[in-house]
Length: 227
Image 1 (cartoon, rainbow, N blue to C red):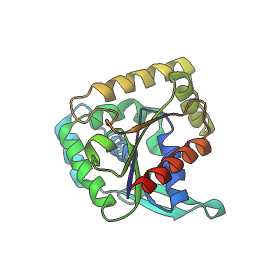
Image 2: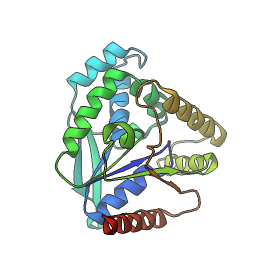
Image 3: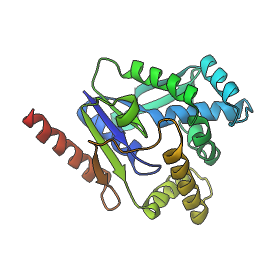
Image 4: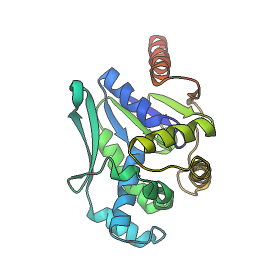
């Protein structure tokens, strides 16, 4: 079974998808983190993120992988690696956030990433989250959800995430960056951020992660009874 969760930046996709996967004992794939990992490597190599050919060539040379590990309190932790180096913290930096939409808009990059994502997800139960999962990566996913939240709430969540990592935050600047990210992701030519026609929209603005997960699992249970 494939459960696709799409939505804009800071709408809660990663938190919900990880917890849902753990609850259902499914595998989990964060496709957005894969683009972030590539962006991080692009910046590390001092490659211009506007240079499509060099970005694509770099992608061909590196290995992006995700491992499922046991963390504190025996909880599941999903860690991302680039050439064997764990980059969970590095890929969430403001600099990566500011450049990831530039790198992820290239057609050749997206085609290559989709192949990897489909390979990772083949033959198993998995929760996959991103921006084009239900429309491009897995158009035939068993269940499709689209998470939303107000701009204020999304900025608040992102600010909290950065502050917990000791990264200084200017709230108004953060809001502008999210608006710009939404614009780039939604208007790009290839695989734009878009709600699949059959996707179920869940506004998480006033819901806790547990409440969202409960809502999703209830929908899945009800739909499976109908089949």
